[in-house]
Amino acid sequence: MNLWLRLIWALLSWRSRGPLSIWDVGVRTFRVWPSDLDIFNHMNNGKYGSLMDLSRLDLMLRSGTWQQLRKLRWYPVVVAETITFRKSLAPWQTFQMESRVAGWDAEGFYVDQRFTVAGEIYAQAWVRLRFLQNPRGIVTPVQILEKLGRPADVREVPQWVLDWAANTALPKGKAPAPSIWN
Image (tube, rainbow, N blue to C red; front, side, top):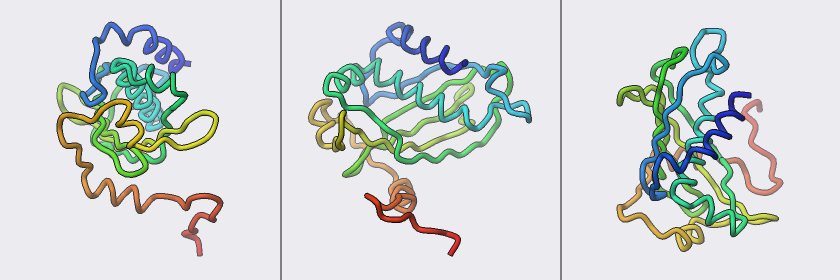
């Protein structure tokens, strides 16, 4: 239920956080609620992904990207993500989510997202997004960049992230996924 409350709050409050470019770092402040906790009394690892979704939505709303793409019936989906945890987030602790579009390849965009407390990174995630169009089809990064414009700086995704994406990709179409149990 708290995610619904957070989503409603995100949709009602994004204007109060001020405008951004899609190429800026979006920052959202959250607090660890009791319903975010696991049996070890720290934020459950499943909550991180949900808060990352809300933070990406906030960046897209504040930059006007969400509104532009919605008119075109284009929407993002997560293709892959990886997260590394350094410290636990405790009950009632306040933290910031930093989200930045780090770059793209031929098929998707890469977003670097960090959970920080007083500037210290507690967890960091890399998310690979692809954009789809309704009712069917894939929107390429080239098409997105034509609509949004390119960033002023060079956005180079670290090689290890590109390698991770390539090494974790599942086969396209109806090809069977590789099995590790053989």
